[in-house]
Image (cartoon, rainbow, N blue to C red):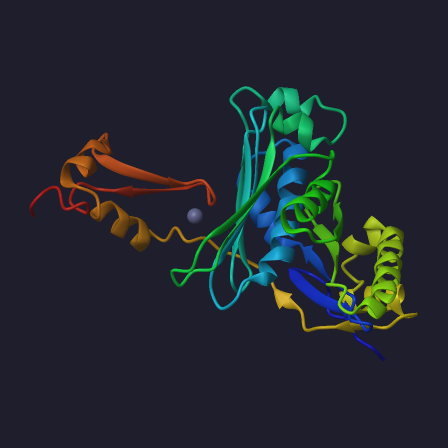
Length: 299
Ligand SMILES: [Zn+2]
């Protein structure tokens, strides 16, 4: 008997046996619920943030040893910012900003449209900070195509000259489950290999096209079973899954260190009703510091 581990909070990399196409499958359950539950978002904003969580989980696998991967979409509309970042090892965090008074307008929308929520001049930016003092890299493209999957495909075509295709899925209601599958075409290599590469890419695209959203979301369908179901004809290598968790870099000790690096007069200016407060938007949590903790009064 084969036992299946529920595909929850996992990122599973794979490669077609021919070596021409690689990809990833992501499914986040409790991780998505924790992050999406920190604010009372309109459902369409929840979906938008949920989709970006999946993209970040897919792409942060490119991080080595340490570093931070960030994906953000920005605009001038009802939702000016959605940002998700991930550190090496799979810790995710993210939030969406909703313009003041925009909640009702978003709740009144009848269909899911990232462009309609983000508004004019919206763009998608991906930043890779490799850490260890290495050069930070950022790519930006206009938010074209009215889905996050299309925007990401477009990003890779324009910014990286890479063929990538993505399919995303999100549960209709809480408890939230967000999932996705991505395929990426490998470099073509020798002229003789070009035709095989083209053929493998078209095959992978066709198979991705057949994946149903329910299959991506099904907690009892693990990535390996789904991938064998899809690619059994050409063969697929499924690698060990990476765990995805919730994490933030806003520890109280870290905030305190940051505050103490400011001048005493700046620290004094932060006091409201005798306390300095620092809010982390990712966690939606406020840390309060007394004048004594800020070194502003003697014992
Ligand atoms: Zn935080």
